Length: 379
Ligand code: IMP
Ligand code: ZN
Image (cartoon, rainbow, N blue to C red; front, side, top):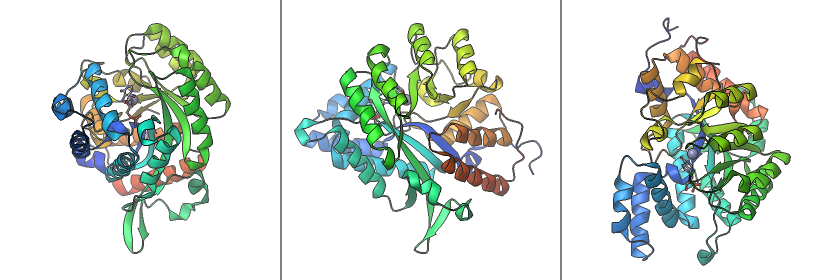
C-alpha cells in the first residue's frame, strides 16, 4: 500500500486505466495523418495547402482558429476511406494510452459528390472499428453482457497466442450547431436505428458562437423520449440564457461548463449532472486563462461529479494520461485521488450496467497491481 496516496508522475498516469467520455473523432486525428490527407487533397485540387498549412501546424489556437481547423479537417476527411482510417487510428491511440472504455463522438455528414449519406458516413466509422487488429474492440451492446467476469480483470487478452489490449467503445452521434432542425432530427433518428451497433447517445457541439438552442430542441427531445442518452456542449462561451435552458432540459452530462455562474453550479449540483472537463482544450482556446484558474478545482473541491477528457487530442496535442497529469500536478492530487477520479467515471458512462460491472473489475485488478489505497478523493 502507498501510505501517502503516492506522488503522481506521467508514467503512472499512463499506467492507470482510464475512461474517455468526450472525444471528437475528427478532432482526435493524428498530426501525421492530417498532414498526409491535406497533401492528398492538394494533389486532387480540393485544397490549397499553403492556405491551411499554418492552421494545421499551429500549436495554440483561439476558438475561431480551432473552428477554422475543423473546417479544414472536414474538407479533407469527409470520404469513406479517410474516415475508416481515422477511426481505426484514433481507437488504437486511445488503447495505447491505457483507455479501457471510450465514448467516441462524431457528426454524421453528407457529401453528395461522393455519394456519402449520414448513414454511409457511420458505416465507414464502423468499418474502421472492425478493421482494428492490434486491439480487441468491444463495441456491440451484447459484448458486455455476454462476456464472463472470469475473463477479467485482465485488459490484455490473449488471441491467437498474442496479447492484445481490450477496449470498450461506444458511439455518440453529434449534432453540429450549424445544422438545420431537420438535419438534427435525421441524426438522432440515425442514432436510434444504430443502437444495436454501439450507438448510445447524442451530443450537441459545433461552433458555440453559431446557431440557436431552440433549433435543436425538437430533435433532442425526440432523442430523450426514445431513450438515447444526451450530452451537451454547454457554457463554452458567455451565454447565460442558453446555459439555463440547457440545464432545464436536464441532459445526462455536459461538456466544458466554462462560463457557469453560481446559480448554474447550484442547478447542476441539484440535478447531479457530471461535467466532462477538458483542461488543455479550455486553456488553448482561451476559454479559461490558465489550468490553475480552471473550474476543475471548484468542481473537485465541492465534490461535484466530473470526468477528465481530451476533447480533441489531435487538435490540442494531448492524450488522456497527459490530462490526468496536468490535473494532478496543478491541483496537487495524489495517486489514490487520481485513481478514484478515474474510477468514478464509470458511474457516468452511457453503456449499460453489464459494461459498468466489467469496468469495475478492471479497476479492482489495476488497484491491486498498482497497490493504491483509495478512498480519499472526490466521489
Ligand atoms: P467530428 O464530429 O468527428 O467531425 O469532430 C470534429 C467536430 O467536433 C468539429 O467540427 C466540431 O463540430 C466538433 N467539436 C470539436 N471540438 C469542439 C469543441 O471544443 N466545441 C464544440 N464543438 C467541437
Ligand atoms: Zn467537445
